[in-house]
Image (cartoon, rainbow, N blue to C red):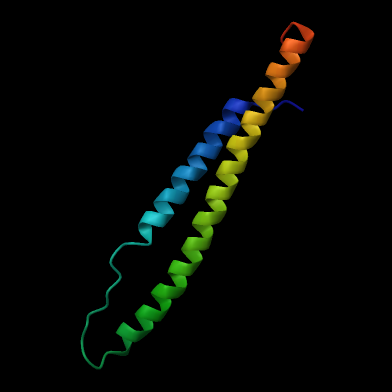
Length: 92
């Protein structure tokens, strides 16, 4: 199997950026019309809370996947470096 640590690192960084964007989107204004008697304000608040919880979880999963890919890239690079030192040459 051919693994590209650079590509793993780039995809991991992209996922971390995406997680930050999702977190930032959670802080946008979702206020309703603020009209007394409108049921939409209450419903909007409930739905926004549920959506925020989902986005928080999504951002966490994206960040964890990004961290995992960056960590894997570092592991592959360390293994390649170790093999190069032990064998006295690059494998690939």
